[in-house]
Amino acid sequence: MESQTILTRLDPRLLVLLCSLGGLCAWLAPWTWTAPLLLPALCLALNAWRTLPGGRVIAVAQIAFILLWGLGFLGFRAWEAGEIAPETVEQTLIFCARLGTMLGLALAIPLALTPLALGRVMAWGLRKLGAPETAWRAALALVIMLSFLPKGLRALSGLNRSLRLRVPNLPRRRAFFLLGLASLRLLGVQTWEISLAIAGRDLYRPGPWLWRSPYGRSRIKPGPRKE
Image 1 (spheres, rainbow, N blue to C red):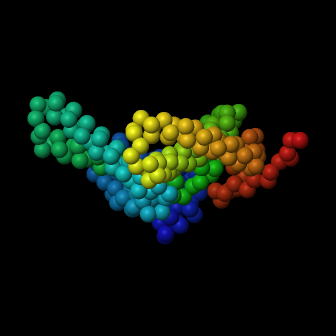
Image 2 (cartoon, rainbow, N blue to C red):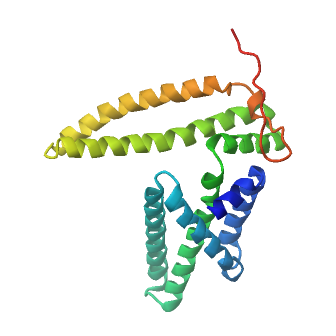
Image 3 (tube, rainbow, N blue to C red):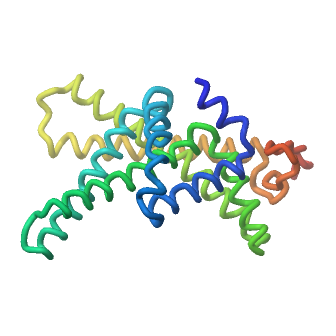
């Protein structure tokens, strides 16, 4: 899509910086200043729902998150005031809009960047902050987490769906037990696959995490392999 194409043409460091500044502005600045950010946030959320793997799950989770915090905010303000005043409802709507804007803008990152690209952005930022020794290790940990979580959730969802279709009348306690056993096996396989991917791309050293291109794309020449 056109919006996604524009995002992928941006320097990843600039994209992360813009998303971070936009989120801070949506949360801290007066609402009259940040209300225009709500429209691009909604466009990004719609794009993510249509294009990202598991986009519908992401949309449902974000909506549930906003509603949960909105109801908590409304209840707390009503408890303080002793009633649900129109001003309280207005503040709750603005609070939910701020949360939605932050979450929508954050979706620009998975729409445009791979976990590896985001890890290189993190390594570059930590290196600029004066932590060169730990930059690549933190970036590697971030890439592993971002790669592991979606795969794990998809695997668990597939296991649950398969179990319900194959054995619809299985007792819940037995289903939890079988899901736990199958999940351990799948997670072990995925851990092995991620380890092979890290070793195959030579990501266990600082070299591949260096930012070497002025155009936002890291061109890495693999170093010599250890025998």
